[in-house]
Image (cartoon, rainbow over all chains, first blue to last red; front, side, top):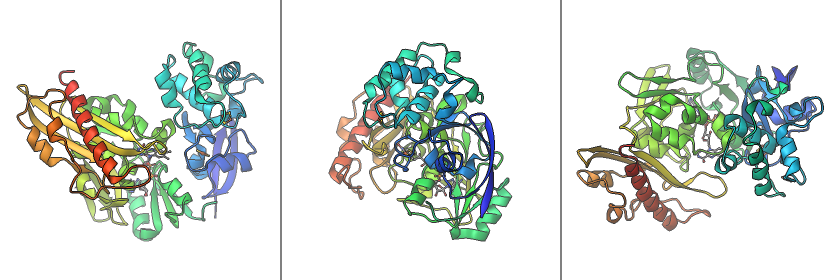
Length: 166
Length: 287
Ligand SMILES: Cc1cc2nc3c(=O)[nH]c(=O)nc-3n(C[C@H](O)[C@H](O)[C@H](O)COP(=O)(O)OP(=O)(O)OC[C@H]3O[C@@H](n4cnc5c(N)ncnc54)[C@H](O)[C@@H]3O)c2cc1C
Ligand code: FES
Ligand code: FES
């Protein structure tokens, strides 16, 4: 049996029919072709599958696509505005905080949520907000440094059109 | 891929109870999904029907009782509890626990009620819910009943919930000021509690007039430290004064033992967390 799912992803409306067992992360990748959201552990540990759902970061391997019916989703792709990187992405680039980049989906969205909640987040707060994302190559210090380098930036600079739901 | 199942998202409690009565053991309630979906992936549970609560009205609220207590609806998340002014003001202990559960994403979507229904022996809340003497509000075709958390959680992953019952909320009685604290030691990988202790004390005229201490993570289900609660009565709340009575608080129970912590080590952690939780609670007197 298939269920209708109407969802807005990165500001664009999609309507699809899916089986109830389809995970949101598989829906985004296999049904919508958005591969910026990665599949790592598939067990809610690593954060590679992070998206923002109605303004809250979510491990998309831990939600069914049917549960996202009616929701607004932002994926890593949605952070690009006119081809420009999001400030969090630029900061990570500047600090050489990503090596293979597999964890970027998680790191970028978790860091963005952290700074939106606490524009002047301290080191402890940044580390706490990154607890749900694992980076297997860079190590966390450059990531924390990159996020901290933005901690004083005005909030509005961290927002963008694609995340209007925030 | 998960085995196939049917998905239902009722709009009302009545509709949900009808579905539960119809499908009984074949149906699983879905709240935040942060225990259930991982368990389904592991094949630990294999429901034929999922009953998603997310469209049901009235379950997302934290409601104040006139006497100072709180009703926490079945869809209230860890994050809601962590940031709610009402919860922080009236039950700082619960908000303190909520802020320590899992990671930011788990807190964004996981719920207090889901955690209690999951009855994971390593979950953080039960220590505080026992110390707060919280009640679980359960609905069924037979009406509503309130069950103390202490009786609701019956063992590891076991609760007193019947197949046709739904938890609507958790009621937390008026808590005594801010002299409470939760201290735990985390499993390095999972982040769950190897041992976690919630302590709440009431000080009157410079003496401890009442104490409640709950311990989680150590045995198959959380327990109260009734003997120590008793011994604390009438004592002066001085930091670090009770070391002599906090020796082997978990002894006499079947203590969990696994690759992360032997029974002996968990028992030691229970003592350490108890001492720290009391000290922290005492440090908050008058704050
Ligand atoms: C990566 C990760 C780390 C975590 N770390 C911690 C931690 O450090 N400490 C901790 O305590 N927990 C931790 N958890 C568990 C987390 O707190 C879960 O959110 C919580 O245990 C379940 O809440 P839920 O809303 O997601 O429930 P669900 O997964 O939706 O449901 C859990 C169970 O309760 C039942 N249920 C839910 N609601 C009701 C209801 N209203 N009536 C009847 N039955 C119901 C479901 O059928 C299911 O059996 C972690 C989870 C993950 C994925
Ligand atoms: S793939 Fe979802 S948390 Fe790892
Ligand atoms: S850069 Fe490779 S996992 Fe983080």
